[in-house]
Image 1 (cartoon, helix red, strand yellow):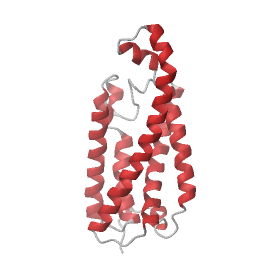
Image 2 (cartoon, helix red, strand yellow):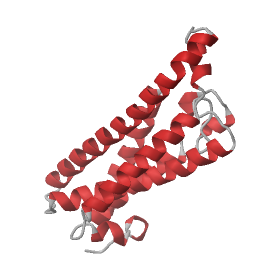
Image 3 (cartoon, one colour):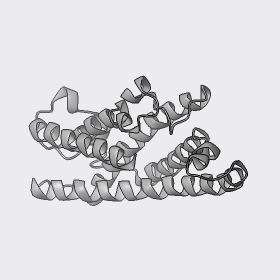
Image 4 (cartoon, one colour):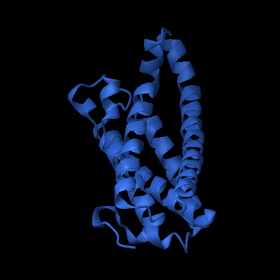
Length: 200
């Protein structure tokens, strides 16, 4: 197969035969815990709860509970997202009649999600460093020009990276054509944008 350079990363191709699942799963668990902790530290829960109508005393009392629930939510949400991405990828490969083991597919999905998580962690760490509230501003998005506008946070570099890496995974790991990989990568980007807007 002739690969398209913008969509080819050798590591994804290697995952077809050497997925190294346990290493990727362990890395995934570490990354989601780090991301969940960083996300918790970049949100002023007391301020957010006050906006919801609680008094300062009530907000301060409820803040630790909401923070823990937030961390648990990020972890569960990440696991669900990986599962859904795996199923979508499996269906795509079935439609295009690509013969690849489920371990090989899952290895590619984990590499995809771990890479996106690394980018998200770097952005979150910068926000923590500069004391920027993630509920108000997201530095890798258009939201940086209009803090507080959560819908603009959907148009972010993280979502662009997610769409492109999904295309890379399909092309390098699944050996889909460059054309279909670009199309499906664009669809993934749109889905990420829509989900971010809905979550906002």
